[in-house]
Picture 1: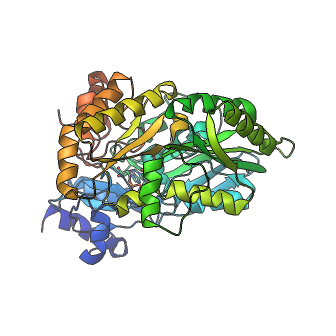
Picture 2: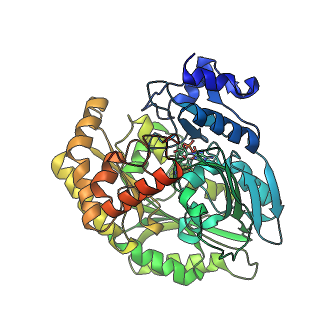
Picture 3: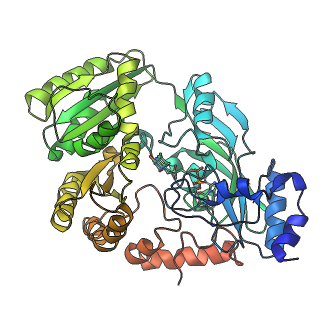
Amino acid sequence: MTSVETALSKLPADIVVRDQDIVSKYTTDFRHLYAGRSMAVLRPRTVAEVQLAVRTLAAHGVPVVPQGGNTSYCTAATPNRDGSEIVISLERLNKVRELDIGNLSMTVDAGCVLSDLQDAALDNDLMLPLSLGSEQSCQIGGNLSTNAGGIAVVKHGMARELVLGLEVVLPDGSLFSDLNPLRKNNSGYDMKQLFIGGEGTLGIITGASLKLVRKPRAVVTAFLAIREISVLSTLLDRAQRFTGDAVTSFEYMSNSSLDLLLSKRPNLRRPLEEASDHYVLLEAATSSHLLDLRGAAEILLEEAMSDGLVIDGAVAANEEHRSHFWHLRENIPEGEVLNGGSVKHDVSVRTSRLAAFIVDASDIVRSCCSEAILSVYGHVGDGNVHFNVVPPHTAQTHEFKEHFERTVSPLIYNLAAQMGGSFSAEYGIGRSKLGLLSEYGDPGKIALMRKLKTALDPNGIMNPGKVIPVA
Ligand SMILES: Cc1cc2nc3c(=O)[nH]c(=O)nc-3n(C[C@H](O)[C@H](O)[C@H](O)COP(=O)(O)OP(=O)(O)OC[C@H]3O[C@@H](n4cnc5c(N)ncnc54)[C@H](O)[C@@H]3O)c2cc1C
């Protein structure tokens, strides 16, 4: 028997899935960019079973790959190709353990699907202010392990900022448990921060205590055609002033991104009559029933149009309008997929430099590859842009992407670095951005990451080959 087989034989049979038709769903990433192999997937039902699985595999030197919803954009949750690693899926750890309305907090299992947690909070007149395109399938453990961003960062911050406590199974199977949902707790090192954004390389998150906020009583959503990209930061600043810092989302869409979607979805329509190269989806919310957010948004639109910042705009009159605006924004990635997919650059710079970044990066693409289709959109309220490039209709998709990534992407990342930005705003490092971390990461930080990894996981069994570049 191999060591993997020996380890598996010591685990309860009903948490071990060996059927390769099922296993392959866990070993391939959702974009089908990477197909790994694994002899089995483990689906523990309790924290004790996660501990047992990790302890048993560790004792036989078998590496593990923690997996949530498997929606990673950087192949972080898939095992390697030699079949030596075992996937541990958290999907059966999916209970809300406690919801404390008075404390504005919930304590949950790591395998809860994000949208289920949003619903559980709403049922109690509260809100979990984390929202991303994959929310119907990603899990809170995956969100915390990737420190996910999404569409509400401008108001509520990245996933890290919503965490009050964490429970983690460490690489030797022991438990780190710090789930107390306290707002103030200065009692030694804040250990939970190590695991948030750790992409499963330091331990398996099994539970979390999360901050909630009051459910909004008023939400106002506007779709704006802006004159030019340079008005973005002025418009955001004005929107914050007019609404009393109530802006929850400030999303940018280039016209070419919208075109890609509408060309394949003719039933969808543009919300505005005037055409522009640039659009903003703005949303603000308040839990107060006394504030007139709608009035503020209408004055903002009126003044921004008379100042020439905005060419045309519409404030959603009802929920149907609002969901139409959001449907367009949320389906832009699908528009890219329907047009052959894209080369993605998940870049951030400070908000004051974002417009300049988009202009300069677009010039780079046009000068290197004039026929490429730019699809630029993203959470620009927090400085994050998805600067994506779609192959021209005439190109061989695979060859184009490969050539582009080799020759033009480095110029885009260099530009982001020169502007003090990041090559990975919200998706993380995983397997596919190791080279970028080696190139653009601070050597001192990478050395410290290696020391931490060795201290917590001396045998290197937790999600090997991810996040930490080979020395
Ligand atoms: C349509 C779409 C839209 C998206 N939009 C956004 C967006 O706006 N913002 C954003 O940040 N991301 C976005 N993503 C990327 C992705 O959804 C997020 O990274 C998400 O947080 C991953 O969650 P998951 O449960 O799918 O994790 P997985 O993909 O399963 O895993 C991701 C990483 O976390 C580790 N991991 C998972 N669960 C655990 C656990 N319990 N303990 C320890 N490690 C664990 C894995 O090993 C892996 O390294 C999007 C993806 C899609 C497909």
